[in-house]
Structures are given as C-alpha cells and as structure tokens.
Image (cartoon, rainbow, N blue to C red; front, top):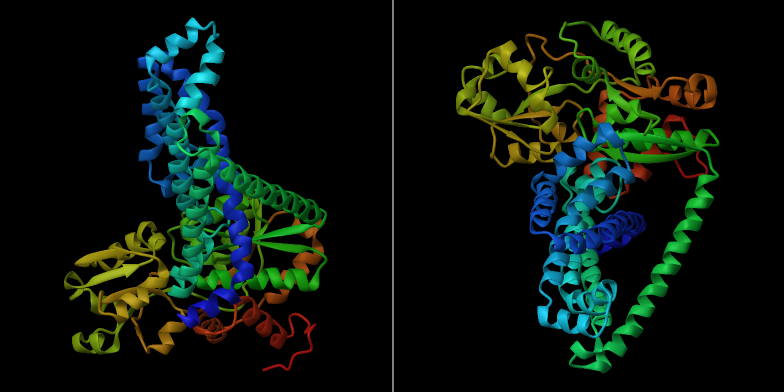
Length: 525
C-alpha cells in the first residue's frame, strides 16, 4: 500500500493533466447531451409514436460497443477531443431523453388542468409546473448519464483524446498494476464527486413546496456557489493556458498504445524539443490502422512505424521481399498515393516471433514454427489484437505453415508474456525486442519458412516537412542508426520494471548517445 501511495504521488503531475482532460471531454459531452436531450424529451411527450421512434433511435447508439463506435468515427472526424466528445454525447443521450420524457409524462393531469384553469399559457405550464415537478426524475437521468460517460471516456484515450484512460491502458500494456490504479482510482472518485455535485444541484432546483427541509436547500445553495466558483476559475485558467500554448509552434507526435511505441514517441518528442524551437505534443493512439488514418488526415505530424506493418497491413502487399525492397516500396507508394514519407531506419528490427517456455519446447522437441505444427492442435496461442486479423499475422501464418491451434486468445500485448509464464497458454506471439524475453529466458521459435517480412523501425512524416520544417527533418534523422536490438530490449525492460519515469529513462539514453545535450549537467552512466 505504501509503495502505491509513493508511486501515486510521483505520478501526480500526469494525473493532474489526465484528470483535466477527462473532465473536459466528459463535461462537454454531457452538456451537449443535456442541451439537446432535455428539449427532445419534452417535445416527444406530444406524440406516442414520435416518442417510440426517438427513444428507439437513441437506444440504438447504446447497443453499439463503445470501442467499435470510437473506431468507426475516425475516418469521418479524425482523432482527438472532437470525435471523443461526439461519441460520448451519443452515449449520453438515452438516459437524459428517457428520464425527461418519463418525468414530464408523470406529472398529474389534474395539476396540469388546475394550472390551465388559472390562466397559464402552455409555456408557463411547462416551466412553472411540469419541469419543477419532474426535476428529480430528469436529474436522475443526467446523473446516470454523467457517471456512465466518465467511465466510458477512458476508452477515448485510444483515439488520442487523452484522459485517465491513457494511464489505465499504459498500465495494462506494461503489466503495471500501480499505473492501472493511478488511472482507475481518480476515475472512480471523479464519478462519485460528479454524482454528488449533481445531487446537490437537484436539491437546489427542487421547488420549496416539495422539500421536507428548507434549511438544507440553503446549505446546498452555498455548496453549489463554491463549486461554481471553483469551476469558473478552473475553466478560466485552462482557457488562459490554451491561449498561451497556441502561440508556440507545435509538432504532434503520435505513437501506438504499447510499451515500445511509447518509448519511441517520447524519444521523438524529446529530440524535437531539445534541438528545435518547436514544442512536441505526444498523442497515444490505438493499434491497427488508427494511427495510419490519423497521419493521412493530418491529425498527427509524425510517428514511428514498422516497415513490415506498412508493407503488408497498410499497402496490402503479399509478395515476399528483402528489407531494402520493402523500404523502397513503402517510400514510393507513400509519396505517390498518401502524401507521406518515411526516413531511413533507426537501426533495429522488431519482428513478430513465437515464444515458448524452454522446458515446454524441449519436452516436445520444438525449435521451429514447423516443429510446432505437430503439437499445435493441443496448444493455446495468444497474441495482440492487431495480429489476429492481418495477412502478415495469424491469417497468413496459418496458411503458410498449415498450422491450427487448439484455441487462440486475443489480448493486450502487455498481458501475453505474463499469460505464458503463468501457464495459461503454451505459445505466445511476442515482439522480438520485448525486454521480458531475455529476462525470463524464453525460447523464440525459428521462422524457418521466412514468413514474417522485415520490421525495421522508420519514422513516418507528412509530405512537405522537408520544405517547411527542414530543422525537424534534420533532428529526426539524428535517430537514423541510433538504436540496436539489445538497446531497445534494455529500454523496454527499464520502462516496465525500472523505478524511473519513462521520460527520464529516454532522456538519459539520448544524452548518453550524444543525440541531445545534458542541460542539467548530470553524470553520464
């Protein structure tokens, strides 16, 4: 417990940034849902048929898995806060519309008739009778919507919207429970605080005649005023920060949501800020084609990629080729068809590999993937999600080796090796530069048919950088040939098990390599 508290305190600056991002996207989504959902809920009370149609339509969005909806919206709206707010708004609508409809319809007809008999107009009946009576039910829908949205917003980290979900996903992918809790606990607390605040607001909005304790309302008004002042000051400071930062030219650096990609993303950001006048904004995105679509749409400027992924998954190439041919093919087609470019490889290759515990492989005499074929139908394979649906992944390797496993489990890359070590699976699909491979002395099976293409690491940039941001190109090229496989394995392991933040680990590495200057005059390792 003490170790977690110390870890949490160390991460407070990151938690603060992520919490502000989480509050922003959640409050925006729910506010828009209230502004649209409440009027719709009121309007549909006029027609039973209309109410059924609207509630059914709003309910459809609730049935679509949130992760799928986030993925589907990227080609339309890109990445970042805007698509995240839009998706969360869709998820927020149903409880608000439903409770508004139920609350208004639940007002006693005799009360409405009495109001009309007193000479009230329809608008006055709505604002002075129906809404005050229905406020508790309406606020119930808003509270449900807000709490649910705070939880769902964690997934928004996968499309670069930030928030507390980024800490959670980083923790999962590095098997760091402390980091998972560092993101999960503030999320739960935020949901609790938001629910309490809305409960106070509900009591303040409730008419005096419907209250059992009027003194409590006065106390709640004071609490609400304090909360409102804090929120206004916070919003003002945030607007000031955004105005100040908007004056600094910024390069948006993307990376995928697993350990090695985070290292490379931080590395690119640090050399940009150390060697140019630009500020670097790091954005974490999901795997698969999400990041490729992001750079094509101009949502990010630069990101690290593996040539085998670009060649097979993005360009759809199936022909086997050597590293030089793969690189030249990507560079040519990127420039011609996608307005993208890639720089020379940064020095190491991170290919896919099948890993087994040595004692298990020895028991069956397995050294190559072909050797595995004889026993695979009694073994469980696990690998990262993106591997399962790619031709340079599971689909292709099953055809090439004519191999079939007893069962296949798709999971986050950070959990694959731990599943192998705990004997939940027999075969793990791993990245060859994973630091845990050497630590646990895992056996990598030989790809004897040479199925996997070369996976050299290159930096992908938007076309035109060489003309308008020549200093950025020069800085990025300082990484060409800078890392080898052993160095990357070491960095990966330090990021998972080291005591220092990943930013410090990368900073020390870059200084030792002479890529950036030591501005703090530390002693080199």
